[in-house]
Image 1 (cartoon, rainbow, N blue to C red):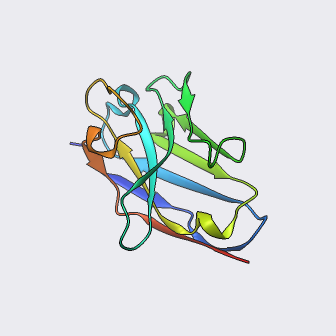
Image 2 (cartoon, one colour):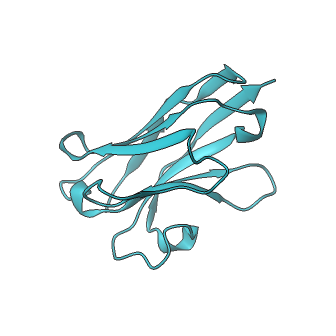
Image 3 (cartoon, helix red, strand yellow):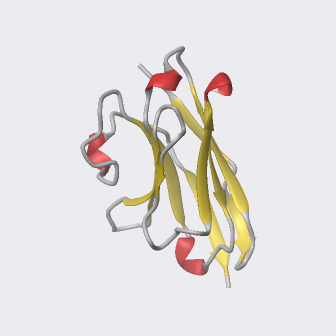
Length: 125
């Protein structure tokens, strides 16, 4: 079992930055590929970022590429999402997720086994 807790959300003006953190319980955190997703009311979860268990490979959708950066510190059992140049359309609840097995496609939310409760990010124009 892995428990995930996100922090760092809040209200920011367009063009600003936020850093989200996702703290994981369990001693095997370093084995889990991790992802970030976001969701707005009435819509499906959207893929935001992915990092492999060793942190060497990352993946982003075009909508955030060049603005968001995912990273992880396995010694601290934490994955981060640095968000720069934020836009009003980035407003959503952001959740981190962990996969207990090998991922076929890290952009698909159902491939992940554990989820945090989410943290609200609101970007004002």
